[in-house]
Amino acid sequence: MSENWEAGRLDSDLEGVGFDTLAVRAGQQRTPEGEHGEAMFLTSSYVFRSAADAAARFAGEVPGNVYSRYTNPTVRAFEQRIAALEGAEQAVATASGMAAILAIVMSLCSAGDHVLVSRSVFGSTISLFEKYLKRFGIEVDYPPLADLDAWQAAFKSNTKLLFVESPSNPLAELVDIAALAEIAHARDALLVVDNCFCTPALQQPLKLGADIVMHSATKFIDGQGRGLGGVVAGRKAQMELVVGFLRTAGPTLSPFNAWMFLKGLETLRVRMQAQSAAALELAQWLETQAGIEHVYYAGLPSHPQHELAKRQQSAFGAVVSFEVAGGKEAAWRFIDATRVISITTNLGDTKSTIAHPATTSHGRLSPQERANAGIRDSLIRVAVGLEDIADLKADLARGLAAI
Ligand SMILES: *Cc1c(COP(=O)(O)O)cnc(C)c1O
Image (cartoon, rainbow, N blue to C red; front, side, top):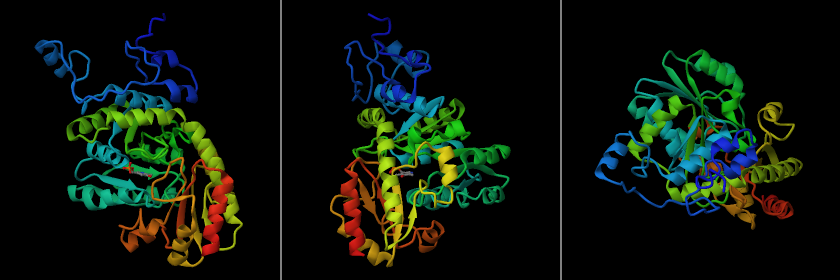
């Protein structure tokens, strides 16, 4: 019996192994039962051996779990697996992707600080800054994602944090992460990357120079549309502050969802590669169709940042957006004509999804905010899953025939 049979194979055994091995094995701690799959610890609290043990654990003098708002073994396994995949010193899980963004800002910024958020971020991210964080004295500006000169010009003496999504949702714009990290560091600011659309399987922002990477685990990390979660990863110095906020404020991840995400990570790279390949094929096909005015996909040579995407990512992702001739009415007719693809705003699922961003994910933005984000009424977003590509193409052809 190997020495570490009880503990399972520990991170120390995994030194030097590849991404896929980490995705399948990192972070697992085997219990004395010898379970092969990851154990799920559905418990809110933990029993102490004595009053003195309880006091020592609460004081942090003895390691061990106290309460699942602080630590939970299943959640920790997920955190360690993500840290391994992103190349981070530490990762911390959150109840959702939005909770991850909130935790980053609440733990690293104070009233009077200035944050730069790329113009094309997820709709709720803009709402979080505009409706809530501004009320607590956080100043926010929104430079256009790809324009490094605009980022330079947007800095103020109190700029603390830069927040970007690359590629962006739903228009697949990119920013040169390494170049933006240099700009941030020259001004003593931190660069945060929402890596939801690529996942560490296609892009590792920390290795490009970003300080913090975050995810909505709800999307590709789960991969099968089962539950909500998020994660933040980076250096210990910053992660300790994020952990402190989460333990106190409470938007921590449930162990059940952590367990689902552990299983999701095991197939992440294979799914990302297959879904990206299918998305590329559909994007190429859509670009040749009458009735399609524009296709937004960084895998197309017509995309203005195609070369950057090839350099920065190992594939182009599973999300394809396009504009149809005929505005909102035509876009809705296209969507309603599909039979296989699900009409839902979620993405990152094995089931392909189709949505009209202007009236759903970005519907709560003002018309001005929507125009700033480049979301037109004619825009449709498809997140490609794992169905037969011929069936997906036939479904999109039904949509085209309906416009
Ligand atoms: C969905 C999403 C979020 C928010 O995540 P939730 O898990 O829904 O809270 C943040 N960023 C991006 C890019 C997303 O797609």
